[in-house]
Image 1 (spheres, helix red, strand yellow):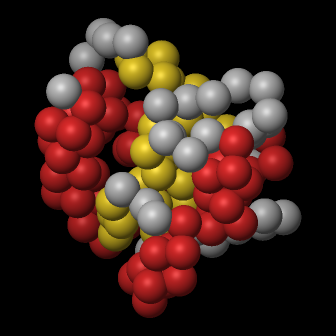
Image 2 (image 1 turned 90 degrees about the horizontal axis):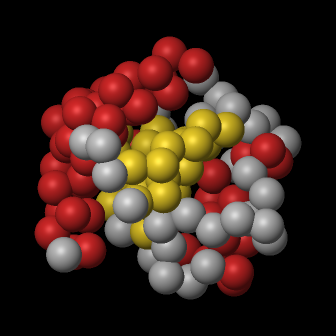
Length: 120
């Protein structure tokens, strides 16, 4: 069973992302949602996959990914953002994929296909 965390401050985006993930992954899934990056307690609970918005209050997704990498270096990190210009900033944490919110459905489906292929 895949454990997936979605961290995004926009509830509409969370709903869309959740729907796509549930349709693509199916029942073999434990999905948890966090609206603030600080709500994810990375020292207590590890996930297989982290779907992270980059532009969030308090701590942005790249800062959160840096913390995740230190404690869970094998976790898959997929950034999801409206800020395409931040793709290069994300490379320092070696993300698995970068999803543009402007092409959310297509990009996320492709990312999940590649993820499932890599896991299997």
